[in-house]
Every structure is written in structure tokens, then in C-alpha cells.
Length: 180
Length: 81
Image (cartoon, rainbow over all chains, first blue to last red; front, side):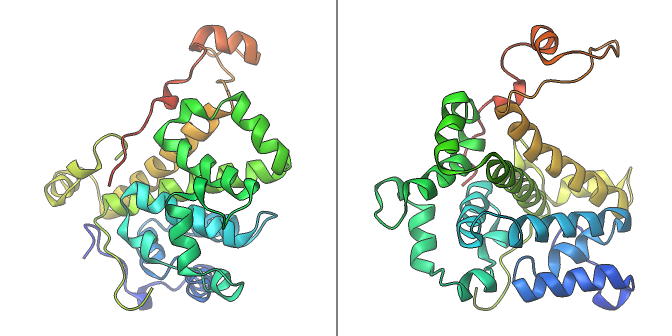
């Protein structure tokens, strides 16, 4: 059990928040644990859920790539909860566990990824490990593969999901039971 | 949460509950997580504060002179595995 007890489903009556929870469950990320905890702060629960879902499932960067980035970050954050969740949409688009493992491992030497994908994985990898390396030269390299709107989409996605992963880690959230 | 997440345990939450409700603790936690993620991202963009410490509106060049060439958010984070 997390250090802050999540609200029971039946205690959440706001139709918009209930819809956002359903959207998360349909995607697979997040399941209902994150929003039931966030719902303890009703003013924040909806915008945070909207941002979590929109940054991951919408936009102009490949959702499958963002799913690998998200899992890589969750493992770095030491967050067992988000690390265990999987996007059904990414799976339906063909993302495999083998590719996720390759992306979270030695992706630089892997022939499974394009240079653009490696650059995006490096962006996530370095952002919190050694952010000083994410400098003007690094952004110049990113711009060879991505437009500025895509770079902002990716950067904001990395920042937001890493922050929420650290939040869930701080609450002692465990990996959900059952198959990932 | 940012520098020593393992120190946030059940005893830490007991201490928090002496001063804050669960609603306030979740609000604080979401706010801290959000800022933890975004400050580093903004730091990589060389994004400087718009205002001086005394509240004067600054250009980015002026702000860099006041706040330094490297934002403090660019300090490396220890892997937490």
C-alpha cells in the first residue's frame, strides 16, 4: 500500500476525472492507482491526468518511441509502478518487450534503432544523469532528426513523466499485480 | 525526493501528517515532482528567470549575468537504481 491511501473508485464522482481514469486504463498508462492518489487533491488531479495522457498518447513524436523513453526514465527514477505499466496502444502498433529492453539497455550499439531514435533515447538518458551534456551541440544534433516542436514535445514529455515517476516512487508505489 | 528519495519512507510521511492533510501532501508531492522534472529540462534550454531578485523584468542576457552561465538545475542526478 502506498504511504498515501488512494481514494476508492466509488468516492470519485467528478465525471471528467472518471473519464480520464477510463482513458488511462484503456491506454494502460497509468492504471487507476495514480489518479486515485492524485484525486486526494481534486484541483490538481484532472490537469495532471490530462497532461500525463496527452503528452504520451498524442503529439507528433512516435508513440512507440515515447513508450520506450518513458520506461527507460521510470527505471532510472527507481519507480517500480510506472516501469511495470505498458501502453496497449504501443503494443498494438508493434512495440515488443525485446525492443523495450534494447532501448533501456545498450541502445547505442543496437541495430534495432535509427540514429534519430538513438538521439531521442540519449536525450532522456542524459537529462537527469548528466544534464550538462544536453547543451547547444546536443540540441543541434537533435535538430538533425526532429523539428523544434517535436523536440519540445519530447523534452516536456521527459520532464513531466520523470517528475510523476519520482512522485510515485516517493509514495512507495509497487509494480501492479498481474502481467505487464 | 530529488536528492535522497530513499529517505522518504513511512516515518517521513508520519512526520508530514503532523503538519499537513493527505490532500495537502498530494498537492505538495505533485508540485515537487512537476518542478523536479521541468527545472532540469528548462535548464538544458538555457532558459533564464524573467525577473531579477528585486522584481525587475530582465532580458535573457541580463538574466544570465545575474544568475550565472549554468543553472543550478543542471547538476547531475545520481542514478537511483
